[in-house]
Length: 354
Picture 1 (tube, rainbow, N blue to C red):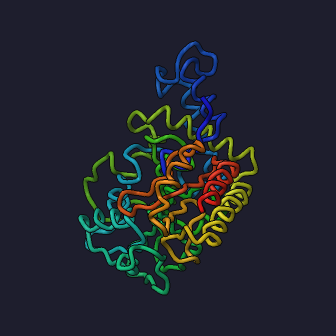
Picture 2 (cartoon, rainbow, N blue to C red):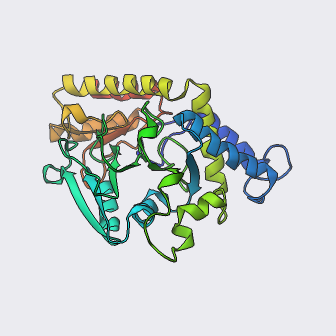
Picture 3 (cartoon, rainbow, N blue to C red):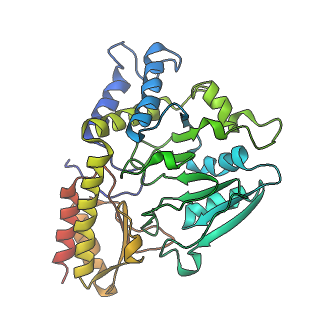
């Protein structure tokens, strides 16, 4: 059966060689006669995987030993709670930017642990732009933002200068574009977009920011310091997703790193947005300046052509193009592993609808 053109928003396409290497590891890991799924997470073979999976993140992000890399369970959604639990001081307050559904989820959880001020929001305009022109002062314990919004197809192109800790949920665009990662004190990301399969979450945290909340008797599983001390082995880690994430990051590193991935991603996004802008049958949901390079959310302007378009893209072997249930329309996710050839197939289908 021929491989589909996978535009799924996540879990999503990964490099073909990662699928092949992962499959081999399930049958026989490192030639040891055992499956990756049955070895101890404390065996030397897997400890080596975890050590390199942590090290490669620092290399790709160009970060030093003042940062710690963690691989945790619970998805980015658990980080909605862990971030304020570890950074929001007792009696303190945090600043949040509300740019979409997942940002709103983070705000909801943080409010359970203390005072949260939403310093900017585009909710009233159906999250069709990234708020700008706000300030975050030093009386906040931290500022939280979401770099890319998978549902509405918006992305932060720049990040504000703030007088406090900078926290970012990069779940849907991590490792897709160059930036100064040292601007951030804590970064987290669910793996199932650009990084690996579902089931593991990456946390990159500056060690010096921890232990300052005044919170006593912290729950161990929610305490970053516990996970750092145990080198992401406080409990049994998600062994297979960590290994597949390592393979994905190794593939990225040997194919030009983040800089090369960014060039490929910009070319893919330009190809698709150019077609949307020149074809009166299609339009995006968001303002032009905030368009995401990762998730292109768009709609058809003539409902009478919808059935023809749907049949055509399915016939072309395209998968995962339906928009999020809360927004409708279509969503083409252009993650690192998606080849530009798949985008061309979609563009050709769009051109064929008259």
